[in-house]
Length: 186
Image (cartoon, rainbow, N blue to C red; front, side, top):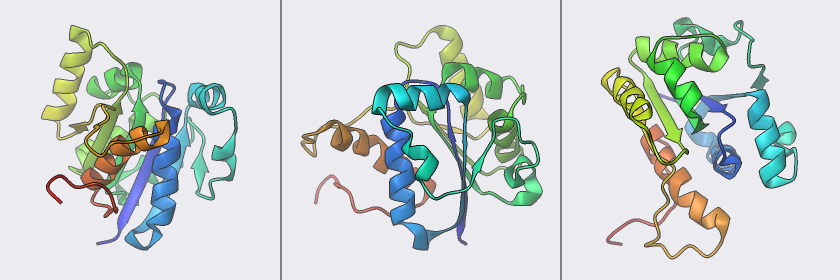
């Protein structure tokens, strides 16, 4: 089965994670049928602040507005089988955990969960309070995957992008996309 993937970018710090994920998905084009992207207004501001560019406008993938409920992945009949929220703000996570589908990201996450498909939330905030932890638990119990943006260092990354790639490669593994990356024990 070819992957149909929704990538959602929220306003949490960590635009580099979204940038690398989108770039790596484009490189792995043979492994997916469709990739669609939705970004919040805050995500666009954070991207500009952290990366000093608006390269997301030139990524070459279909973009949907935050309140476009006509997007194909706003319904289970669109058959998107994976959703990656990277980075996933705690506000977005809280709305998903409580079934509040007030924008395209939370609606798409609700659809993915109700259809028993794969939802991967890349939590970037730290530390967590009890509300965050309970929201993560709720999403996990509903079938979602919480993947904190916690890099690994055994591959000896030398740049910020290499550090961030340790998280992105793990997310791609979770999504079923094969990537050439450091593997423990090799």
